[in-house]
Image (cartoon, rainbow, N blue to C red; front, top):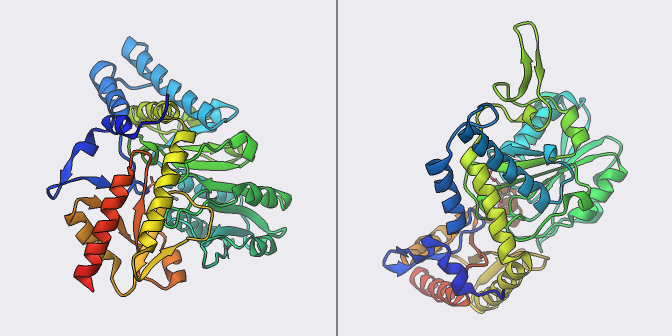
Length: 405
Ligand SMILES: *Cc1c(COP(=O)(O)O)cnc(C)c1O
């Protein structure tokens, strides 16, 4: 079926809201996406019809809940073209997935080993690795970026050496929208025997990552960035890595046998899934994947690219406008400032006009330091946004500029 944005918008109840007396224009999709009725229904359906704990009951509700939760795992496996469903670990989100891997590497790194992080990471793909380096004596090195907002690949190649054990980089930057060349990053790392973790939190709503084709060692994402619920996400790890890493948390569900002398761990994926998980969230994650695939990622890309191109052109026509990360392959994120005006002031005025954008460092302070700015205004578009909404953004930015300068 052809993409029809007004029909799509009808499926998102929140888009009918007014904010400060104006119809809501939601342009903070990079922070979290809105939820279609199908996802909301999947949560309500679970809690109203078959709420029960999973993997342990003999009773009917528990069996239904287990089946639905495992069906969601299978949807995730298929969507990301993962070989085995036991390589799909449910997490509470990207941050949890990264911490799980970073913690696991504590026992695998030696003092003097090197790990590489990119200059454009979210704090959640920096801090856990700094903590890992403090625990192990490994050294954190940074792959630099240029003014256009791209990683400098020549420098990356020079940083790789026989001591490099791990590389972690985002697939798409949440602060700039840059699409990183992860195929090449993975290939080069593997030539040096280093493993790669890709943070896919920002990518998952825009592109479908084929994880077998990429050959990536770890890939993490959050459901809430792709129309799913908050508090649930996935960690993909190659089976050989997941076998090697120790469990992250101990508790119920993750054991094979417990005595006070010794506990043995459950097989994958349960080894990493201690305690009662976010069952409704997992089921909703599956519903979100179904929903996005029904819309189709080609249609999503087409709509988002047209919004990005139109908004870029219109915004650049405003005097004093600077867009960061303009000269690179990027998704529908526009991070900008207007000369002499604090981003927070623009954001506050936009909210008064019903427009939701993000202002600040976007959990990526090193990028702001690189450009020597306190932060940016970030408008991030989803497929359910419209060209009329871009017009409202541009008119509002012009008005804010007039009021503030
Ligand atoms: C949102 C985001 C994260 C953090 O995700 P959580 O759901 O808060 O754990 C990490 N990296 C990137 C690139 C993101 O966009």
